[in-house]
Every structure is written in structure tokens, then in C-alpha cells.
Image 1 (cartoon, rainbow, N blue to C red):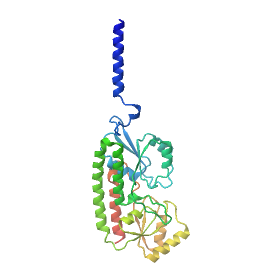
Image 2 (image 1 turned 180 degrees about the vertical axis):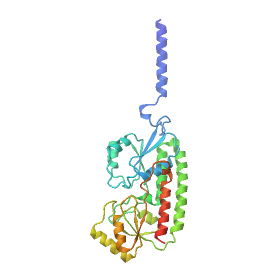
Image 3 (image 1 turned 60 degrees about the vertical axis):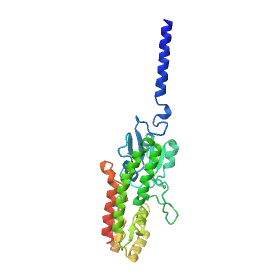
Image 4 (image 1 turned 135 degrees about the vertical axis):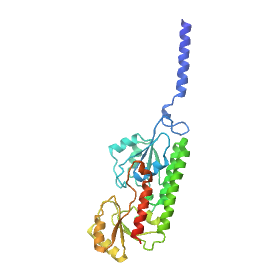
Length: 308
């Protein structure tokens, strides 16, 4: 009887060793030892705001186990002075990766890192040459330039591939397909805009310097440095004077914000107000994949009308 019990105990011990050897350790719940995402776990990627969400869903399209969640509401717009909400923090707690625009857009990033030091950060603006204003402040609106949007897509694919190496080929393949679409649109826009004679424009937000550099447009003045911060009467008077002296015919207001100041300037100068979209808002359904492309196509048509 004792011999039989000893035999059973030995069998249980061997089984326990086998099971513990096959089961994942606590450290590898989400990743394998090679740095790849475990096949049986959702790989949750959180993006900071809409333009980065669009890039990321294109890079991760069809990748098994990957779920992309946009932290902010799709109508949030740029993250100027954005304050993290308790809901945002809960979303980030579940994230494996946080994809950001970078270049200073996410001013709250230090808070995220301090609360979740293990969270992997993908910086979409890594290595991109940044423009600065007259005070030396770096402009984070790099995605509005198609050339820089291409670099951001490549950055996201490269950094996700390093984190989730098992799906690196899919990330790179998806990025290449999306980059082809971006490149085709970039060429179309250059072919249409490079010959435009009237290149002076006025915008209502610091979102367009990269766009202007891309297409060799001259931003004569910026009405609102920050969205929603209406110019003072003195600033408005200076801008009206600038528009008249430079004979600027086109004022470009963003559809995300009220165009009250733009309309006032238009009344005083005879200039016409046109919408120019920085692609910071949109749907999060199936149409989101081509959202940036569609916005830039509309911007092209607007510029052709305004600068003819």
C-alpha cells in the first residue's frame, strides 16, 4: 500500500513539473521571451489623438490579437493644454503600448510615465526635423505635412515591430501599403499646387507651417496662435492691416473651430474665408482608414479654388 502511494505521489510531482514548465511565467503574460506578443492575449495599443489613431490602425490592420483604442474622443482636436481624465488613465492602465505624436504635443506624457513606468511608448515624431516659431518654441503639428506623415507611419511600424517582433512583417507590409497611398496623394498635390502663383495665405492656428513648407506656401499671418483664443481688438486691427497691405485674398479657418474672427477680417478686407482641415477629427469606424487621405484631398480642392 505504501509503495502504491509513493508511486502516485511521484506521478503527481512529475505532472506538476511538466505543467509549470509549459505555463507562462508571470513576467511573460503579455510577451514571450523573444519580445513577441503572446498568441493568447490581446495586445492593446492606445493612441493619443485622432491623427495618430489613423496612422496606427493602418499599420496594424489585420494583425492578429491587436486592438487599437484612441484615448481621446475623435472630436477632441489638437491636444493643446489637454488634461488627462480619470477615464483616460483607466484606458492607459490596460494598454501595452501608448502611441503618441511626440514633439511636445502630449504635454501630459510625464504624468503618464510616472504612473505607468512600464508602459511602452511609441514616438511617431522620432527623428523628424521640427519647425520653431519666432520664440524658439517647437511646433508639434508634423502630421499636417504629408512628407512628415509618411515618416510618422514608418516610425510607428518600426517601433511596434521592435516591441511585437512576431508580427513585424505585417506591420511593415501594412505601412508600405499605406505609404503608397500617401505618396500618390503627395505627388498629386505637388503636381497641382507647385505651379500656383498666389502663395500668400493667412491661417487661424499654428497647425499649418509644415503644410506650408511642404507646398511652398507663405503664411503671412496667424490669427489665433491657440485654437479658441480669439485675437484682441488690437491684434485683429493689425491683421486687417496686414491683409490689406499684402493683398491677401484667402483666409483659411479650420472646420473644428468657430470662424468668428475670420469673418470679421473678411468683412473688413474683402478676402474670402475657406476651410482648411488639419485632419485632427473624424470617424472611428471603417472609414477612418482613409480619413487623412480624404481630408487632404479636400484641402487640395480648397487650395486650388482659393489660390487660382
